[in-house]
Length: 241
Image (tube, rainbow, N blue to C red):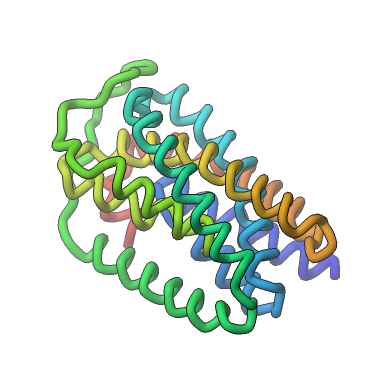
């Protein structure tokens, strides 16, 4: 069991490093690992979202400290994202786990392919400024942001996949990577908290492995600040690959 917890902690650390640096990856990585162990889908989503709250707080504070967030954009993402998370959780808790498992597995494969496709193409170069905290990103095409955030909330409630839906959209719209990633990571805290709270209210604590949750939280909190620092200096495509 100790070896398993170390493995989960290492997975949480790696997933948070990827998520904090790319704005995506924690949920799909963690969900895939936990689903493969036979844990019920609803318990997997609860575990992943609880871990994301802890790692997300660490990442959000770090991104704010390094000037990687747009506060207005965070609200534009968080509010519809929370609504979408409630929809995803409702589906997750009202459909049989055995029925959902292959569907969720297919969703995770599609999310992984989307990430690979996104980083196989050139991205906007990272700004090289080292200014302090900022509350506004450069102007970009904001059309559809709320819709995409709501869709990301749904997939987050189902499989913990928020970033792979929202971050590529913002990058495609022309938002510099550091602001896209920092803002998405920060908004994710609210979305994950709503999803985890709703799932806990529906499930209770019977199906949850406290040791696994703590191990993932610890690994994620350790990696998140490092990732927020790295994103300022390394091109996003290189990190994605």
